[in-house]
Image 1 (cartoon, helix red, strand yellow):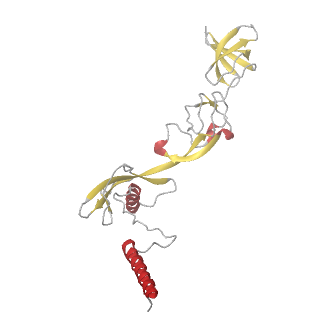
Image 2 (cartoon, helix red, strand yellow; image 1 turned 180 degrees about the vertical axis):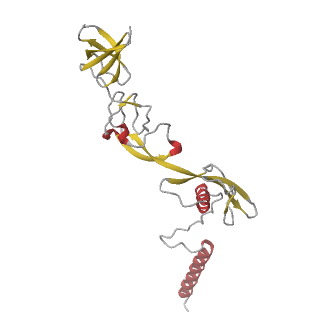
Length: 254
């Protein structure tokens, strides 16, 4: 072989050896479009929502089926509670006496190398229809059906005297401002105006054990058992009375 040919062959071999060594050191290039993924670490702590669901399922096993107006209230378990994740399935068992009619204490148990247990209360909550203000209502407003809506709420959340039927509230007067979305109670409402300003009324007065009736005119609006100003049409005298019913005002003794 001529000298020039031998030189070319030697250079080619040297280049091939260099490329082979580079590949061996760096490893094969990743395929285009493929990204190496890092395995996701398993959660270290138990999920509180899953624990509450487990307690609820065990409570449901211990009670008869709930009605349409009942539900379970479970826990709540503190959201920042950190219980190490159990390597075995967490067991739920009844921990309270069976004679309790509306509630139960459920024990959640983890039985592995690092055991733990947790007590969760589950109770049956009744719900009820409740009348709610559909929007803000100003004092003195006479309520109509458009001012009201009906919602379902836990009975434990409802204030004393709550209304469960909107028909009870229609026609009554707001005795105080009511914010939109607020529960309506009988303490917030009074009967509609019995006496209206300018209308003719019957004045009733006690005169020595006798009841005297006179024609009068209301000078102010008045609810049942509320004070109103009236004018005696016979004498022209302006006095104060108490609205006892529609169009009847009892004169207050001076």
